[in-house]
Length: 278
Image (cartoon, rainbow, N blue to C red; front, side, top):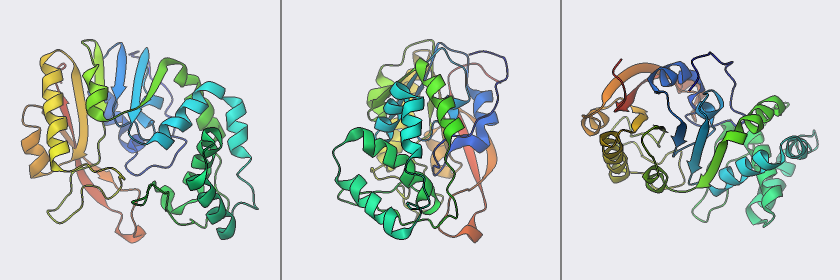
């Protein structure tokens, strides 16, 4: 990774837990390497603001990966296609629910990818949530004029020349890591309390066992010379599971919440497995 500073670019998608606000802490923890692997790529904030020669970017959400592949392949043409949905006529409750239903029913992968951008920018709080049947079910957001992220999408397309996008679970993605790679993991966070839900912002099950499996995989890769950094809440549970890691802690303001008044600060950590000591 180059030591030269690069401009900070916001992700083109709104995303619960997106790492734009803590990029400085993450970049300080990431080691040099030939390739960055992200098993939970999400909005791609880390990818968009680092400078590795190659990237392996994965997520279990097929809609997200399909969008990234179309943007990677088509660039400006796909960006303009996405822009065509950002009209005053489509910024109404009736149009939104019609397009959401179309998204959930369609087989055209390219159109569905463009609608994913539309839904992300027009839905409530930019949430990505699916019902038990796999249908996107976030309500209309009622924004005066949703922002179309043309410049951010163009930046993503330019950087995607170095990337491979895969729809895969974290274990499968991490299995291919080799010495010289760096791995950054941003899993669904462990709950802050015993009554909180592990899967509040994730359509996939990611509970206690998955948290533990991820920590053990990080230890295994570190023993083979692969540096792994994991983001999570700073709790007794994560401290126990990351006992073999170097811990970096900081406060982070929550940016997505059902109740805007309740958006406050939460203690988070980076667990650094392997690599150089600070």
